[in-house]
Image (tube, rainbow, N blue to C red; front, side, top):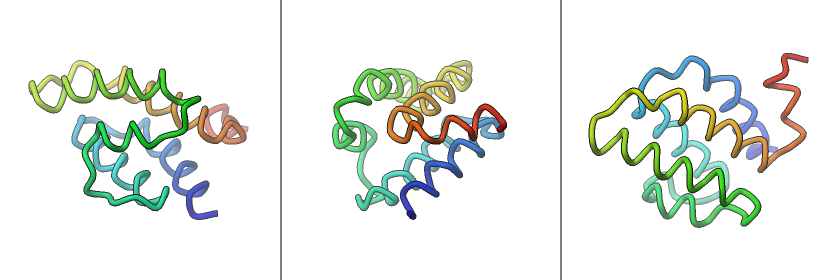
Length: 101
């Protein structure tokens, strides 16, 4: 239940996040919800996710690493969309959170 709730809360919080650092903190929370260390690298987190989330994970990795390590903030919308898509592929029942129903 804790894992599901964390993903639900993530979907609710995504629209308010403004920086890549905010999104990285949210990903740490998702990592802990999965029972993994919150201190693992982005690549380690993405590699531990179920295989059906792989395409979303690759997009997150590319966009978020670029934004974090090159100091770019223009990709925040793309990163939020990637995280949203990953959450929905991990827990499809959460589609009601983003649809507003």
